[in-house]
Picture 1: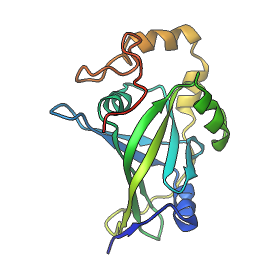
Picture 2 (picture 1 turned 90 degrees about the vertical axis):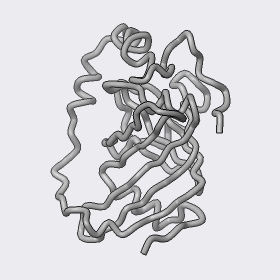
Picture 3 (picture 1 turned 180 degrees about the vertical axis):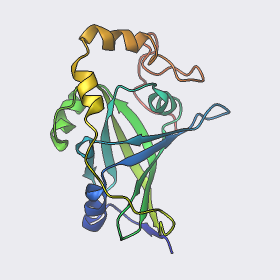
Picture 4 (picture 1 turned 90 degrees about the horizontal axis):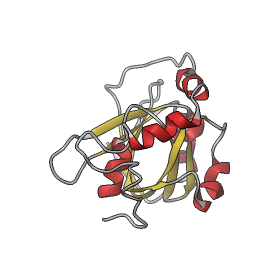
Amino acid sequence: MGKVFPHLDDALRKFIGEQAMFFVATAPLEGGRINLSPKGYRDTFAVLDDHTVAYLDLFGSGAETIAHLRENGRITLMFCSFTRNSRILRLFGTGRIVRPDSDEFHRHKGSFGLDHPGIRAMIVIEVDRIADSCGYSVPYYDLVGERPVLDAHHARQPDEKYAGRIVGDNAHSLDGLPALDPDHPLPSTVVR
């Protein structure tokens, strides 16, 4: 039976810290595509307080999460145990984009581990619902290790490549919503 929790207590923080990956889900307000993304590198996720979490958003193949958060802020994170103790933990909340050149980014950067190349933004989520479920049908998997491919790829890229992506494939979502488009600056508040 699932349980709803009032805050991110020590046991939940421990469970989160033990997971090698998590999943991020967002969607536009109307129509469009739902985005569901796996995220690796466990040192890119941090619990900031009892109701606030954040993760480092690395450049990838698109900018759906950023575009959806700009439009409506809705986000769900899922942590899933693949070990003998089955459990799924979902964090529901409102997310916002924090740019790498902001004071807030620098205040929270110490909450994360290694410095990864290709950091696009920090996603900060105000969590309003914390719930788990059994995960009884989730298979067992053994972690071999973290895949170093994305960090290695980003380390080889010149700054000009990232600047080009901001106005290129990361400028808009698949549905045309503004993401990193410099002609559409990030909002100071998220529409709820």
